[in-house]
Structure formats: structure tokens, C-alpha cells
Amino acid sequence: MKRALVTGGAGFLGSNLCDLLLDRGLQVVCMDNLITGNVGNIEHLAGNPNFKFIKQDVTEYIFLPGPLDYIFHFASPASPIDYLELPIQTLKVGSLGTHKTLGLAKAKNATFLLASTSEVYGDPLIHPQTEDYWGNVNPIGPRGVYDEAKRFAEAITMAYHRFHGVNTRIVRIFNTFGPRMRAHDGRVVPAFICQALENKPITVFGDGSQTRSFCYVSDLLEGIYKLALSEETDPVNIGNPREMTVSQFAELIVNLTGSTSEIEYHPLPVDDPKIRQPNIEKAGRILGWEPIVKLEEGLGNTIEWFKKFTS
Image (cartoon, rainbow, N blue to C red):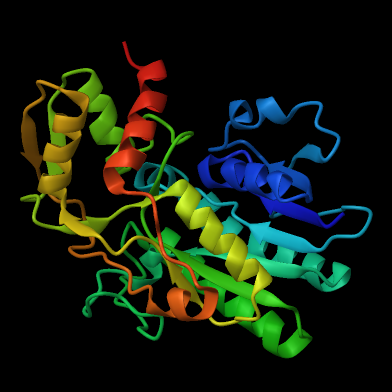
């Protein structure tokens, strides 16, 4: 059996990735220090002989005996609340954590896949965003700790590929949603759903004209799996190009939940991107991938998940 390490494996994306890899017949080692991950996301895997959990910070030395075929480096605080409250940890996991996991990939001759982000494009000046765009990032702004950590992670990943010959992949993940998101992590999907389910005001920042694109988790992970099996070493966008304004998204959540919530507008946070839409032409051409889950269907599944946590 092929064997994979998933760092950040108790988080939203990481835990869903563990499930997919197990379903595809791999043995999975999940590593997480649980500062933003949740052991509840993987408790259903307890007793599975092909699954192992290690509580560890990936910025420390990683000792993992036995062969390893894949490393999926997903460890990182990933929401605005997280990286504003954990700025140093965010920078360290993007730099030291990526360095440690790349070293392990080199030692094990494993394929290394970095979970990067659309945030490397910053507040983009081109639209939609293509992989050859270098971005418009404020390196010293409050969001810079996440943006620059991921940009450094991409740079060191390519350095290990070019200098050490490590077999690397880079996925730039656009807004993704689905079950196992944390209710109060500050991202727009859980925030709006939880507010709507509780009939509280839905807080939209700015005038609501900024745009976002939302990809359901199963679509994203299918694209990532195909990327891992491909030969593509340059970054690849994975996301859903269906774009809508934040105000339109808030109205959609109100309708889907049957909520009585009103929409309230608040000042826009510093460096909040005004537009975000992936160009996925490369993923379609190289991986034969495109999203298939309709936004309303994915939101229905996610709303059912969050109903367990709201009164």
C-alpha cells in the first residue's frame, strides 16, 4: 500500500483529505498540533488499521519511520481570525514547517504537495487570477503573515525541486467550504450560515460589492488528488470560478436557511481583497478537472452540518 503523511490532518481540509486518501487505498499518517485542528474531525478513524494520528508541531524535527510515498503539507492557520491571533505560528509553519516537511520528502523520496492559497495573489490587479500572475501583496500588513508565509512556502518548495530534485506539487486553493469547518473561524461561509441559523444580523464587511468564488470540499480534494498523481510541478489553481458579490452570497444564505436575519454592513478590514476568482483553465487542461458540485447543493450539505452546533 502507498503511504501518505497529511500535516494539518485534523483540520477542515486535512481531515477530509485523510478520508479521501483512505478511500483510495492509501495508508495515512495524520500530523497536527491541534492549535486550530480538532481531533473530533478524525475520531471516526480511530481503530482504522490504515490510519495513525501523531500530535506534533511540524516546525519541530519530524521522525517518521518506514517508507513514505506522499506528503500533503496542509498545516497552517487558515482563516483571518487564526492568523491575526497566531501571527508568529502562521509564519513559522509556512517557513520552518515547510522546510521540515520538504526535508522529510527528500529523505523518503516522497512526492511533496504544498497546500498554497489564492492569498498569494493578494488584492489582485488582474481578474480572474491566473497562475502566472505574481500578485499584489502588502508584506507588512496584518494579512501579510499568511500571504508571505505561503509565498515563502512556494519559493522553498520550488528550490527543493530545482536544487534537490524533490518531486513537488503546488496547489493554490481558492475559497473552499463544506462540513467540518469551524463555526466561528471568521470565514464568510461559516459566519453567514451560523448567523442565519440563529436569526442574527449577517455581518457584511465593506459595501458588499467585493466578490468571492466558492468551491465545495469534495471538488477541491478531487483536484488535489489528481494533481498529486500528475507530473505538473508549477502551481495550479483549484477552485470554482462561479463568482458572486458578498452581498449576493449573504442573500443566498438567508434564502437557503429560511432565516429572518437582516444584513448589516461594517467597515472593510485592512487589505481585504476586492475580487477573487480563479482561472482554472490550467487545471482543466492538465488534470482534466473541473468542479461539479453546484453551490446550492454544497451549501445545503454545509448548512445541515452547522445545524448541529446552533440552537
